[in-house]
Image (cartoon, rainbow, N blue to C red; front, top):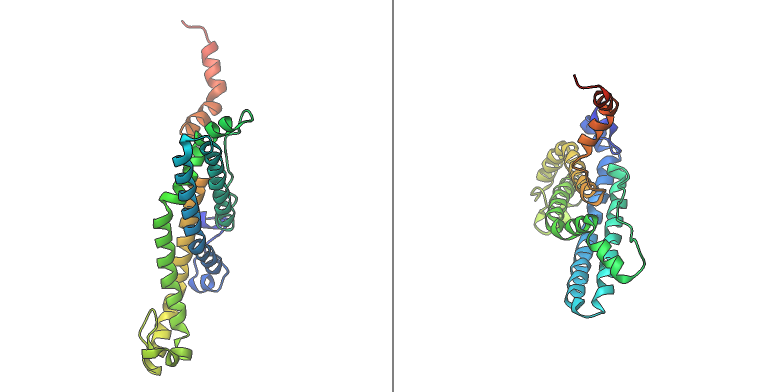
Length: 235
């Protein structure tokens, strides 16, 4: 079994089967969903952080900072749910607040690396992810539109379509044939872009990787051997 077959959202290596499977359409929905959601999440996150930071000099700024952390985590949870059909469950790992109170919640949440990774996804990666999703969707919908252009090219002033120029029935049919040949490969493009986006979301919004995980795993496997050596007398 290959790596792609083990993914929660496997990619079919046969172009025609890939085109007529649900994969590119689920990927299209994932990318489309980000276009209206991302600007809203970006704007609200930046506004909440800016207002709470400015008012931090007053007592009202402290609960606002706690609320801003909650807003960021809520948006991150939404993105985890959206990525689940493509990359599987994305678990969250936030530090629990040890004691009740605003100051304890404030210190715990804003010292938690997971909160800052959420902010990085929502704010720093917003422009490149939005550009990636929009560019891929433009190509994808242009190809799909060109396939159907013989049915509606005459209704468009000048006969233009997004992907190819169709000012007559002949040119629209040629465009449709060429676009039909490209469509299976564009299905890979839109699916690959969605998987890339979802993997970025899983990397940042999931639990942070432990840099000592590999060493701990080796020590756990070799633990009995190490203890046996330590118990041997030195000669």
